[in-house]
Image (cartoon, rainbow, N blue to C red):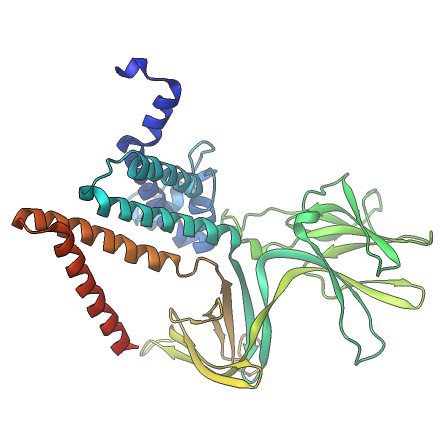
Length: 436
């Protein structure tokens, strides 16, 4: 059948499973990695990662930053030059295309025979690795925990997820704390002119949220001319770019919105501004009860507690530049205590969570005089998937090459290959057992 006589579905299948598409996607991923690495020097890891690797499409390329990262400004300084691009696929889109290409070309379309079994296994493993990246991107929870020496905590604060918390002020100090939470996904579409009311049987009021802004701050209404002002203040939206033009990380943005508490019995409504960086929650009073309403990052609870026993900093000899941060901690699970050490690039993993050493303060920056450590907490359902994928890739390629070798030396391919792989795995398991 000629190419011109193929059905449209066959043509699409042939294109999506082609080597040409795979080569193009891999070349573009290589280019994105190169550009993202160069821009990281000026814009930072978080902003570069968001622009190039987590985006569906790239908005622009900072040619000036890349030029300076290559030290070409020593010969010719081109200044700040940006190339607007809105149709170039980002890393997220390219990885999705690569997944489809590998599935159709490396698994569905490939010829099935004992000669290709190793290649098919390797392709499955690579698909598994790409899926791990997608699961991590969509379902992993990341946050931070800051502890001073001697402090203990079993909670960490999310980097990205925001919530509105409503808490009744308890007059009894022994009363159990109860907090109602409204997730950001319920109100992040409520721009100016839009509003949504939230109600609960446990509250004497309904809460209406409106005028949500992702990056904003309250400003004083000096002449009182604004119709959207609340108690002499209004919400002013500010840029999501920093002074260098780089996109700020989500955790650096301060969101704000207007909240209206309406008495269910028909009393007067109370109106206020919720701001993420506010020094204190907004307080409303209904009858004899007071309620605290605040816009904060979501707090997650760990299945265990962490106590910081000692924080240490190692510097490069003869300099003040940090070489290594180390935290000696105690993991508390009920009455059970376990001593652990967390250091840079060597996290502690337990019960589905990974605890990384993130920051260190010798007490000077905080002014407390007490050493402290900042930990990044990650709950990732796909934490070990890349390792499993790499092992399967190695096994598949090893099987493929051993079977090729068996045919060359004219021995039984299956007995020869599987026997050597079993011996290799046993030796590897023994070595790991001795090391651990």
